[in-house]
Length: 447
Ligand code: NAD
Image 1 (cartoon, rainbow, N blue to C red):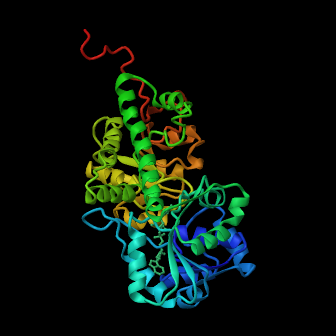
Image 2 (cartoon, rainbow, N blue to C red; image 1 turned 90 degrees about the vertical axis):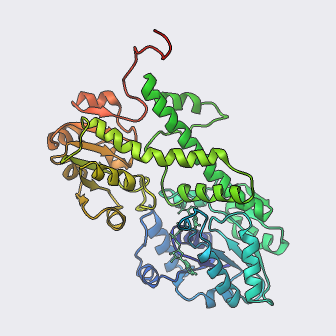
Image 3 (tube, rainbow, N blue to C red; image 1 turned 180 degrees about the horizontal axis):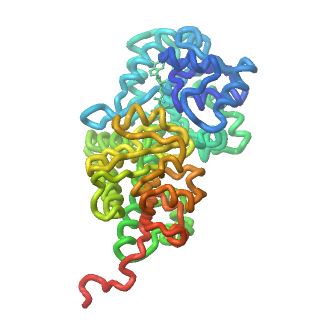
């Protein structure tokens, strides 16, 4: 199959490279000339494990190419994927579909012969209908079918997720488009990945429902963590105890500083807006978004408490800036509101992240100091805060960290250290949902 991928960001680049690896002929298009120039030189615009090798191999074997000009690859393609951004629209939280519709118009002008046009971007229900209308308006004579094929890959494990998906969702009722999609995903079908064909609107909603459900799961365990702290229980054990129930499952039950990243925050907001537009309010998702927002500030108060109630002129060492490990993505990372709040409280912030510092500089306040290792970050600090659970933070030399710090105070927002291990090294330790408090406190209402 000949594939044109419109948008060579996280999803476009990973999907394009994986499709090429399946044996298809892929051209990744992006209007960002700097990105395309870099890709042509073998430089990846994002940090994603294994991506540089995958791209390099497929470029060398002439199955993968990059360009800024969409006309030629689209005119030759059997399938055109739209994988452009759908950020939150400023002010109201709706998904901003400008990039999708602009791409649809450009694609319509360049089509030649029957082509499946597939939205891989996360788009609200009904966007496929609108893409079809916009394309028809641009080129009444074009022969195409618009398909929804939402992407479920996770940053940091994107290639594995793409090649071993839990399922592939394809929304179309057009038989010719179904045949194209079946051929594109045939290698995964051979790997027994379930392919689910459904109606286009249903496919669009599946993506939002999945993200909203996962965001709910995270928020649920975060609230349980808050309660666990108050009643003297351990949220890690609670998560294990409920996660072993097959009906619940153990994934996405790690209490932490609240969800962030390029998808959950914007997708929950967009889904809430869709619910409001269709007068089917999504109260649970609304609450999830609100609770998650409040949590960011609450994390700064946790640091404040660990520091003894004042952060004025104290140095806080922040380990991990990206919204999760194994990515350099800073979009909506919990570290951003946390650091801003710490600075508002009078703290000097020093930070270290293994891959995301360049991106962090663009979005964090200017007066953050950057260190070149976890140990340099801890030097002279009054509090150490672990924000992202990078592998290299899991086995720090706590002796050396303690020796470097002014005071041995650790706030572990990812629960990567057992409290007693941290205590063994002399740290005053604060985790999430497992404060060793109130064990003998009486329940409210009993005296
Ligand atoms: P991104 O911002 O990394 O990439 C989008 C790219 O599209 C940019 O490089 C931009 O220059 C390019 N672009 C925009 N308009 C274009 C046009 N007309 N022609 C050519 N290129 C154009 O975004 P992303 O993270 O890859 O996300 C893309 C979509 O996939 C979003 O809808 C997102 O919600 C969804 N998604 C993302 C993830 C993820 O983990 N990042 C996972 C699943 C789904």
